[in-house]
Length: 118
Length: 104
Length: 404
Image 1 (spheres, rainbow over the protein chains, first blue to last red):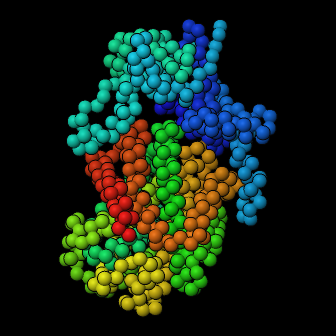
Image 2: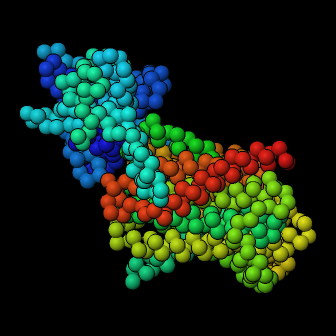
Image 3: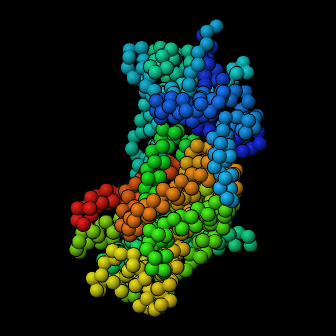
């Protein structure tokens, strides 16, 4: 397996089979005398923006931090929870319970449901 | 045992140097194997060509373009030779000409 | 039987969806200013878009990926943002032109000034996107778009000189007004080879759950649908070449468009042009808004789908909402849709390689297409035509600006 070709930027599906973002980053653990181990993947605009411009990512993180406890840092999925299925990676949680859907839910409640027909 | 975290997406595309300070190429790919039940990175692919090779596949599909010489394959560097102490300046604990090319 | 129906539907929607403000006005300008001489630019553009659409459908059917989806996966975010922003910028201008086209049709029909229509037209488009399913948008509007066949009827009635028309298929150097000649050629190319069209097509194929059994159908839809579409563009060019060119009338106002059919069909001709322009531009407005929302949503891994309720893909729905609003502003501030069309079509041509190069790389990737990767011919045709268009555009845009 190759991390860039097969994991990074691939699509993620949650437990219910819904799209749940993409693999925006991969975290390795470096240990003495042993090869680096994959520990998590990150799904977060913070990680994504950091690839383009770190200052932009920091600014987004500051804004995100105000949204509540546990926010302002990239959301992580433990590597052991991931499983490759067809063209995507599936993880064993409902995305509704994670910050992956936070913006989606916020927009739905604050805007979409207030528009007629939404 | 001391452990540190590294980010694949941040390392990707970084210039890698050898012991003499010469640029080997850019970090392009991480080869993963299962060792003792864990997914670990065993090899790093460093390419003067890795990115170009991807573009190259398509050029060779064109009439006449197949004759244009493509750059050589990327270097394969074992994790034992890779020094990632400073993630902004990854280095290889060897000389460039001692490194192994992919598919050799 | 189901397949035959789908092929027929696919062809009908490609024909109905082919003409929009870009292809109508650029073809009319080409015919008015240069007679049959620029037919080649329509032919070249149509061949190129037919190849691109076929590839796009094949890509989705075999790999189950849309193009934006695969581009993010294959090239990473740092690369992805480049075509994303360029396509977004250029397509927003095109979208402004299309919205303006609907408003222009309404102005000519009601004699109420164009900017007044900006908000109602944007609301109508947005309402359709918000409430209607993918097939209603794709099929419904495109079938109504068949009204554009009126241009072909008109052109045949005028008994064009078919020999001269055929001569126009071969590219020739301009006899006069060289910089304007190349600029119009480039606009025609940009109008035919719309990136949003082939990006959109792959999303449609995924929404309709295509698989490899659709490859033959896909090829037929692309070849027949796009040829008929190109044929309609040629019909517009013929009308302008016969009715405008001999009298040295150039097309520089959209109010001239009804004159393409009124001399032949009278009052009915007037209404047919209005209907063609209005429906074709409305269809294009919906397609472009969706295509751009897909481009963003798929690149970022959001939930997307025109068949989902807005509440199930809030980010996606709000993205096309913002896109429609942004395009509406162009019309609201009173920009002339014809000027906007000219500029946006030329810019489309200039930016073609940005969308086409990464797409071609994907089309030759066995990881996605297995045994169905591109052949020599497809690669060469698309690469050469898009490169020529871009080079011509980059040279002729400044010349046109200086000249006018």
